[in-house]
Structure formats: C-alpha cells, structure tokens
Amino acid sequence: MGKVDIKMPDEFLERISKVGSDFDSIAETVLETGGEVVFARTKSNLSAVIGKGTKYESRSTGELESALGMTTVKMDKQGNHNIKIGFAEPRSDGDSNAKIANIIEYGKHGQLAKPFLKPAKRASKNECITAMQNKFEEEVDKR
Image (cartoon, rainbow, N blue to C red):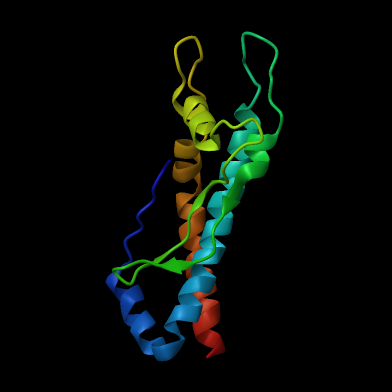
C-alpha cells in the first residue's frame, strides 16, 4: 500500500518543543486531523473507480469500500507518531482486500489500472498540511 512521509519544518519543530509534556496529545490530535483529510480523499477516489469502465458487468459488493479505514495514532520504535489508512482483513470470500486494492490501483492482465491511492496522496497533500497546521495552532493556543 502507499506510504506518506511528511517532513516537518524547523520552525514547526521549535514550536512543538515549547508545548512540553502536552506534545503527545497534540501530535495525536494533529495527525488525526490530517488523516481524516487523506482518508476522505482516498474513500472518494476509491468510490469513483470501483466498477467503472469495466469490460464486463461489475461484481463489486461494496466490501472493499467498507473495509477502508484509519488506525488510531501509534508511536513506533523510533518515537515517531504514525497514523495509517488501509484495508481491514479478511474479506468474507476469503480473498485479501489489500490484493484487490492493489489490482485496482495497478491493474492486471486484461484489467486497466484505476489509481486511487496515488492521486489521493497527491491531491490531499496541501489540504492535509494546512489542516494539520491549523489544528496545531488551535491546540497550542489552548494551552
């Protein structure tokens, strides 16, 4: 699946250091805000491509769309806060949602690619950054 790395500017990192012990709760809130922006765009893109432009009648059950979700914020071994958008497993038919999403994104023999992840990443980047900055400012001003 797709991965997004966002590097923070030095000024932003300096402001983070000023919030002290509240950093973890602020980071979680800010990441959730950004994740919601990317999640909404990904869900919209996925809905737009599923079952469209197929040679045969679509067999879409809606299960892939309903399996799309966002994790809670977690901290990795390096101390970085992460939030992920992906698909719950397994499907009711025993197949993998990740496999089906991969086929939709990149295509396969006889099925054209219908990218939804890469365009979502590209289209939501600026909106995500803006939303996260605004939420950060809001949270810092509260304290």
